[in-house]
Length: 280
Image 1: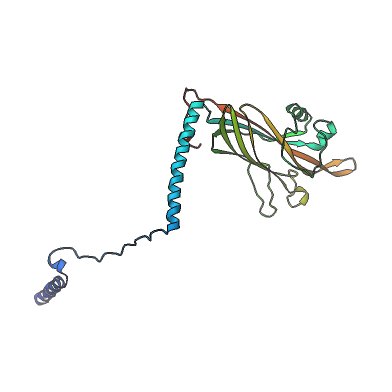
Image 2: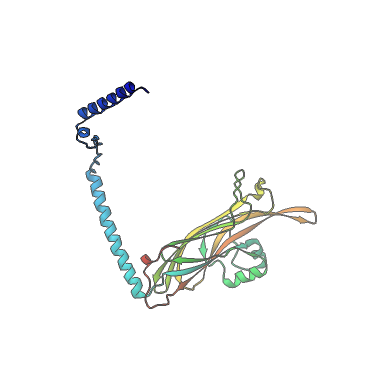
């Protein structure tokens, strides 16, 4: 590049810098350029109805905290256990076989299916189990903190999108136990069970579609006391080989629940309040 051309470029650069300094006073003073501030979005104040609800919310939170402190104090003073173990056994009783054996209560209308206490005694269930008329579907042992839910799943749900069926038995159990003091406990439970009518059969056959049973209830009992609930009847169909060929027979089954709750007593003199125990 020739000396004359270099001098021309330098002169143009000096002129451009001088013009910028004249148009922007901040640059002329050696300060950074100022940027126009962005507008600030001021939140709209809530309407009177919302203000009233917000005030009520704050009051309820204060009341809740006060009630929880009172509950915690009563727990400590009464030595109420906060950790429990819920033993739940789900049985399927072949009602038709039980009636033929003459074990249990009188015959009932299969169309009437209601949950009730004490349809069977423990001795009757043991007799039926020995005869092969009782099948245990699930028997989980759930560790529960008072007032908090616990769940258990037995089996794997392989839902068939075409037939809405399952390939193997599946049970979903949810419980919540509340320690009431004076050796009493209240247990809320929900049990859902699904099983093929006949294992190994095609789900596309209407006779072999999945059987669903559901129980949703609550009981109150003493710690260590066993409760037996039943009365939920359903019809099953199965095919067996007989002397004259394959025979399809219908029989009735009953869902029976055995529930027992054991308290886990603390090793120390004090009892940990419910609010201090984190969910498992």
